[in-house]
Image (cartoon, rainbow, N blue to C red; front, side):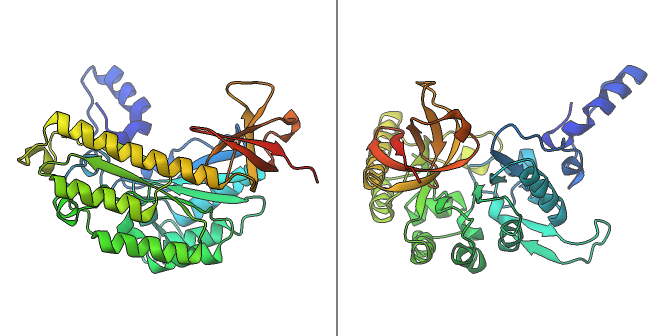
Length: 346
């Protein structure tokens, strides 16, 4: 038996099992050892994912992550820079930084053996990554509102390579529910973050997470969530009905929302966010978007598929030689979950 932080020890555990004949258990949480055993980055496309931290120290009442993945642990600063530089040398043009609370990154700088070295915050990491030659776009997910510091918000004004698209989970539009979830911010504070971000990047595309029918959620609470959706204008979301996780505080909360009510609320929320997504897509009509061509289109191998800066799929006719490169495409049609475009000649 082993946990997610000791997967790299599996060969050793198997060896000990064979040698001793006894069951082997390792459910410890070594802080950085797992990162040291990551396989070398392998490039299969022009974009890549890079893990920079794991775990969570927020202990939201509905979430099992701190108990199963441990508290927040960040990779060493230089290790992240080296991996991304290696990827860029191999032709990667766009990276997505990963972590349960990726913007909580606090990586140790300097010698690995030094415990008194300087700590780099997430904004510092972005600034250094932006200097890597060949890297053109930087994304990250998933972020936490409590970690959207002033320095990180200001980074959207200093770092052009940082895309104008952000996934920032809010979970609810009710302060009462947010407090019960132990999220650590209010609706006003969340909206203040959004306001400051859009003052710097007016074109920012914002998506979010929502948990509907959290224990004790009233009609008034849900109405406040719908009001927040209307005020902020989210460009997509991951929205789910609350599902109790054994061992979490919320699993024992009273006043569950009746399933028919919960389902109706979720449908209303998703309809509203889908409408916002369609409206945002419609506003892109006629725009010339710089897109990263990712491969052949799914439904027609005669066409190419690409990703816009705000992470939409756009399909268009073009030569296969464009795959893995950036191209300028004029948006000609907005469909339910994708766009159509035409290549702009230069």
